[in-house]
Amino acid sequence: MAAHSRGHPAMRERGFSPAGTSPYWWIRPCAGSILFLSLLFLFLFTAAAASAAAPEEEKFTEELLLRPLPDRKALAYFHFRSSAPPAASVGRHHHLFPKAISQLVKKYHISELELSFTQGRWNYEQWGGFDPMSTNNAKPPGVELWGFKLNEGNLRYGALPREAVCTENLTPWLKLLPYRDKAGIASLLYRPSIYKGYYHSQKLKLRSSQSLGIILDQTLTVVLQPNTVSGEQLHSNHGQLQPNWSMRHLFNRKLSGKCLVSKSSRVFIEVDKGIVDNVNKSGSDLSWSNEFFVLSNSPDKLIKGQNHVEIQSSFLYVYDASNYTEEKPLDVGITWKLPLVWTCTPSPFHASRFLMGSGNERGSIALSFMSTNLHKQISGSPTDCSIKAVIFQVVPWYVKVYYHSLEIFIDGSRKTVSEVVDKIHVIPSEDKLLPGTLEMLLRFPCSMQSGTLTLDFDRGFLHIDEYPPDANQGFDIPSALVSFPEFSSARSYPEIDPVLGSPLLENFQEDSVVKSYTEVLLVPLTTPDFSMPYNVITFTCTVLALYFGSLLNALRRRIGEEERELKKTVVILKKWQLLASILYRKFVDELF
Image (cartoon, rainbow, N blue to C red):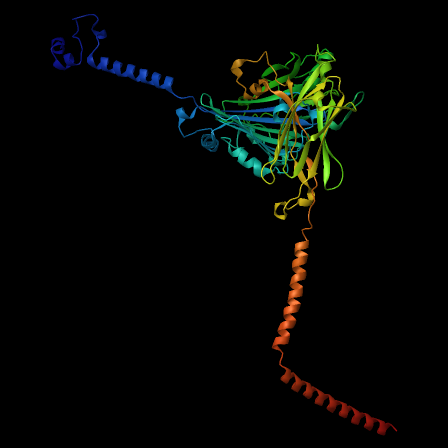
């Protein structure tokens, strides 16, 4: 049998060595094995080369920040980021990034765009004016648009102060998300809870470049009143407690896990600098359960934040939404143990705006500044220093502003323009075409407690076709933007892990100047009586109807027939009179 095996041609053909010829016959490669190994090596090399040359994938992240406010309210800040690599590597197809935004960028060559829809006004006195939240996400009422185009240095700006914000604006905003509001953090956007708040602002921020691709940030900032009665109780010694709240109290829902396509999904509970200072003074630590408050869930991570002067300004408790499911949802909240009073860090000056004058012909716009003495809180700030402020104002064409009438008052005393204004740039408006713009660089002394700027203007006249349906309500002047270029609202997180990759915290770390918006001004203009056309039309039609009716009656009347009819009527009347007289005589004769 062994001899037969050694001489078998099939065995030799397949590379088998006869038994007894070599002790290592089993390691001799055959032709089939060499071909298999070559193909395997080629496949692995091709896969490695393809993975190395594969384009960067699209990414989506979702985050939520919750913060208690000093006036017994709660702030909710939703942040969603969608990013797409450069168009040359992905073509025209997208998996996560909204295609409508990509087409908009390619068609109009947009490098940067920011669009916001806001209802209500940010309370800079109570909710802060020196942090990234108020600087980047506090927007004026109505609609505001900022835009830059590639290879162009011109700024495109537009504002609609009276534009109403409702669910019709939120629905297309949600359609830009991969899962809309069906999963992840976006599922907390319960409409009745969102729109009953004191402040609501949804924003789109778009950035594009040939090297980074397109980055779309969708943010929603809401200030809500916690829906709970447990916080209304009075403490026996120190006064009223802050209201307790959780996700269920704020949004009427719990978070049942992350969105499946999101790279990261986190929830932050932020404690403001005022709370941090009170806790530190008491000697307690800022754990999730301390002397003043306790969180309903133990956080996954703690992050300390610092402002630009290297002072601890906040504390973040981080929760990873991927650790929670529908069976174990996340309902993080805060419960207060002791009454606590604190204030948020304000901007260097509180800016407000109002109208002066009476009548429908002339008036004045006044911009007031009230010092918050912020410079005294910064070490090394002398009393004879100065604070820069930049004012940007868009003036509609129907408000004729006299820029030469600018007057400045500091602490009640009048100052010359050259003493306060370093630079001024004015673009006059064009009637019925373009609004005007005013930009001023001011320099206020640090010792200033109050300052006022006034500008005179004339009210214009509009054609009847240019009035809106509610013209008697008045006409709006968009909010003025006041920025302080010497103050930065950026925060740093020394203990943060670079691997964390939080777009929300990255935005907080960006170097941005402190800025705030003023109120929207309502200017009454001379308005015609819109009922007069109706009255004139009615009166004219009545006169014409009477005239033509009488004319047609006179033209169609037949005189001969009327005379015959009149004679017949006279004869009949005479007969009736004769009959009546006969009957009367008979009655008298019978009676006497």
